[in-house]
Length: 362
Image (cartoon, rainbow, N blue to C red; front, side, top):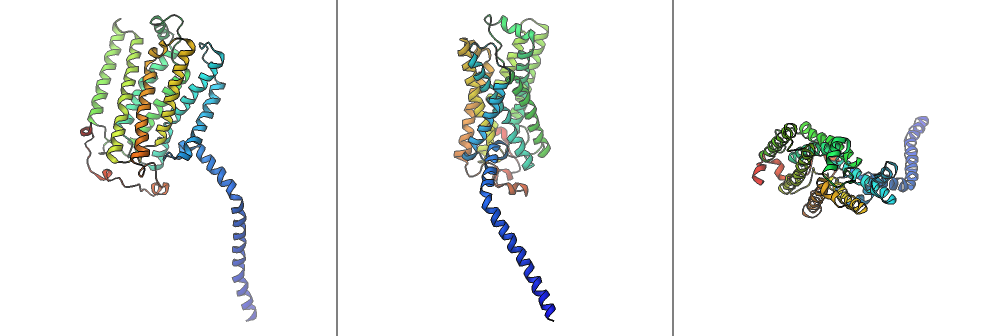
């Protein structure tokens, strides 16, 4: 009986000893954890464009710092624009160009990652996404033709002052092609996760009408450029650029209206706007700086699409900032990530409505 009592006592004490040792180890670990915790937090903030959708002020500067570092490395290491007369400004212009190229290019990823995590796209306007695809398709053809086609370049020089450089940089071409691919992926996510037939993801009649008109204009312009000398291929490319400008003027309106209707920015990643605003400001800065360095301001009129694109984007970005941070601060971003993993989201009353006449708002 004494042996039995001894064994019982040992069995009771051993788990306690192990538990106490584990507690001691945990305490020792906790004593060193602040450094690891701070390091993890710093890394998370650096990659905020991919991990955060609330746009917290504590993550904006670290996230933009990473963008600046990437753009600076690209700008210093890649070939510079030889037509710029000032040697130091060539490097500076290249850095600015690749920072805004990085900001604009990365701006597509936060929404894609957010859609993937949520496994739904409610809160993202299908009209905005569809117009993005058409707009960047036109912009990609415009930039690629001016940058790579000797025939188009000769037409451009014939219509502008002698010695004037082509106002399209390599980063413009890379951005346009990259943006077309990623905007197509975003539109594909809407179809894959929610479909185009629901009341919240169907394309409005107004946008369908716009697509029809744009298609007819492009087809007619192509036929005129082929069979007639009244419209050169350079003129056709300018039409493409103007289509892109018109789309940029219109494409943000559906998303603005959608946010107002839902009284929330849930589902619309604010990092899209933070990076878009950064890219727009730097795009204008590069264009003005290049024109000043060459003492030739015709580069602005010669690249009207790029000039208008920056101003229009900045205007709507400010509207989105106001919606996200001022009008609807309590219903923004992704909220608690665990709720999304469980298939739940903050309740937006409008989302429960069966039908939605979007065209009535326009």
